[in-house]
Length: 208
Length: 223
Picture 1: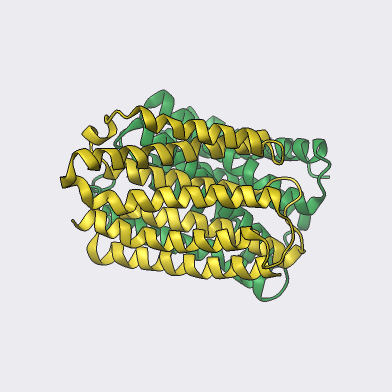
Picture 2 (picture 1 turned 90 degrees about the vertical axis):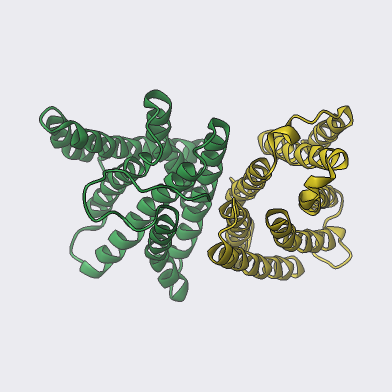
């Protein structure tokens, strides 16, 4: 019950974010604003499918998690957004330490494979690696080129988003139970707050 | 029992004959409608096969298997067209719609064979909901792909993400129309609302449609 309430709050906030992103697009027509709408919209649809299924049937899907696909789509749209906002020079920035991030996601993927399906965990690891590497590389580039600092907040928000997502996934493997003592609930709340911050971060990145 | 192959032959045969007669541009449209009908036939087989293998009940098959299989099968002809013919930017929206129309035609015909054609209201709802859902999903995918056309990587990554989005939208629609009362009404209204949203987005990206002449859409704005 508590998890459903938390999911409903996340859904409402995502609806608000999607509407705000659409309005921002209509008023300012920022470059790549459509991808931000698609990111929020995809996450929103995943949540909506999950909640409706729980509401009408009283249990989670038995065979295939359709909402997972929507969440993966949201990660892809966020990655495409970062790709399109970044410069060619930024994408060519070299920093060996950044490759520790795919190593981290691979390790976590192997850990999660004990609990979930192989394919979905591999897809999640690949998408998360792309987001983490792109954001971390962007931050390295900004340190060398302070004139590109307008995207700093966006990259930090995406990094925090990914790490909270990982913490939430790990918590859901270790802790069970629909109570407030379950850290997954609090991490999912943190994820929602982080997603809300993506909108002002994007605004700062495109308006600078 | 529904003999979907026989219905397929009935619908596909006139199109197949017409392919040899009509003008090049119309032939292309007919070919995509035929591809949509064929995609529907195969998705019916594949959905049934997967449901049997996974021992899924009808509810799980309708909510979790068919949206995935149907949307993937609808995308196959479009992906083939993109890879094999490399059409110019903005040309795939029409083709995606033709595939969706073909798909919805065979699906609705099978529905008619199964449920009869006596209830006008039920068929009106069916036509403007499920039929329109396929068209809206096809249009949404093609618009997203067109908007991300500038680089190959963006185009195909965007296509996969748009496919996932369409699958979820289709799944939500199936959940709602399987209910009673207000939820079902919302479900039936969803495709038409999606269609209106898609038209508005398309107008925003491409601007208003030209009054006459030009086959393709206008200059595209940045998305």
